[in-house]
Length: 196
Image (cartoon, rainbow, N blue to C red; front, side, top):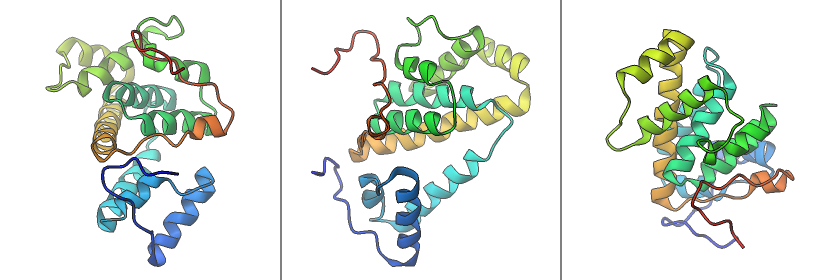
């Protein structure tokens, strides 16, 4: 694979590196190029992986809602790696793949419930710079989800923003995990031409 990253990946070495590579191969069948980029500063990679592992164990907010929010953020920011990974993870976790693949065009799609649409809108509002979350959005989600789940969803979206923005800035792109699993391609946002 030819590197498309803005920071060249380096060889992942050492005991911790061996653990990272083994885990990556078990999960993805290969070591993502982005890990080699982040290995330029192992403490940063370790912190990011730790946050991701801890967040993946949160279970107050529905996994489908968090998956859709993750993909809405990734789509809005343009992080092809995060979109691909999100779809791959939705597949592995047995979530609704048809809805997951529709997230990039959720406003035009008719597959989402009212609550799912509110979560997608909230994720996009949090992703705007500056954020455009309204009192009404928060109040509605608080009423439907409860405070613990809304705090979890909000933090999940924040973490996704951090990771997606970092990946885009570093030039870390999709490695086509979803395609390797035989999953249908993600829908394109409205107004975006499909690749030829």
